[in-house]
Length: 144
Image 1 (cartoon, helix red, strand yellow):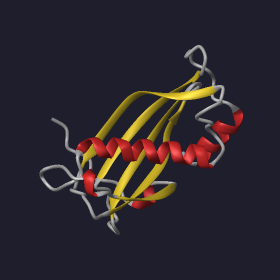
Image 2: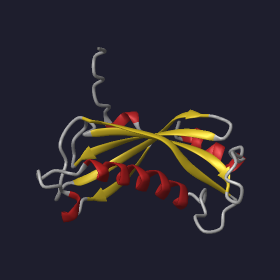
Image 3: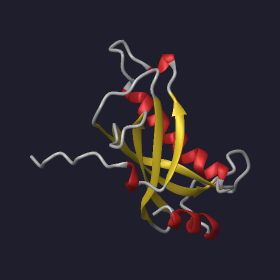
């Protein structure tokens, strides 16, 4: 079996977002439920896209569909922690992108969890793969 990778530090990521935890994020064991990590990943990616004018969730011609995800857990987080998510692009294809997200607890320098989403961009109407547009590609390149 291969050795488990060490968690990344904040300097491995390009853009950041602060996300407060909520009481309901904790599970019966008193820490952040594993499903919440994926919600934080989704919020990090899509908020960045929307805020940068790269995703119109209601009327855009192109949307990103998640085709693969993953997460490694390194340390506990839970309410009332404040989470900082770091975002970067690890791979950029013709119609796909691999986003990588680090979740940092409070002021910790090492990620408590790291995950990824692979989006395939498709035409909204047909759901068929569609090449990433120039504006989106340029923005994604900046955080790669």
